[in-house]
Length: 124
Image 1 (spheres, rainbow, N blue to C red):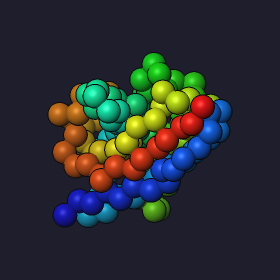
Image 2: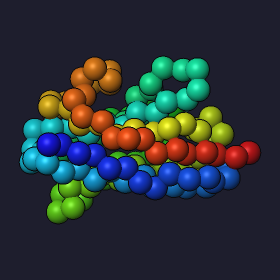
Image 3: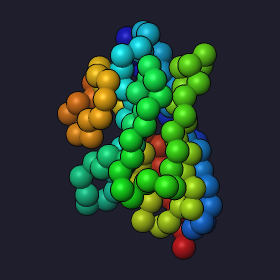
Image 4: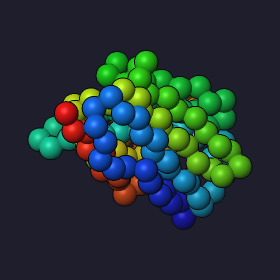
């Protein structure tokens, strides 16, 4: 059974950095892609970025590009979302998700497994 466990959320001031982690277990993930999404009150779930498990290629939403980075530790089956220059508009619950594909898919429906979410609050 695939499980995703997120950690690293918290309360930070604008301009600070935060690193979220998503530890995956339950199978091998070659050929899969991990995506990150966020959910803000009153809004739909929003794509943040993704990383292909096999070659570590990444893709980001425009709001994240240049500020956020994704990396992977294959030995730990863990993906890290490094968020820099955080803004109050980044406040949200952040979710990691796994999809059985290689490439770029930004819609939530492309992903099969989801973590429980971790809250990020950025104060001004």
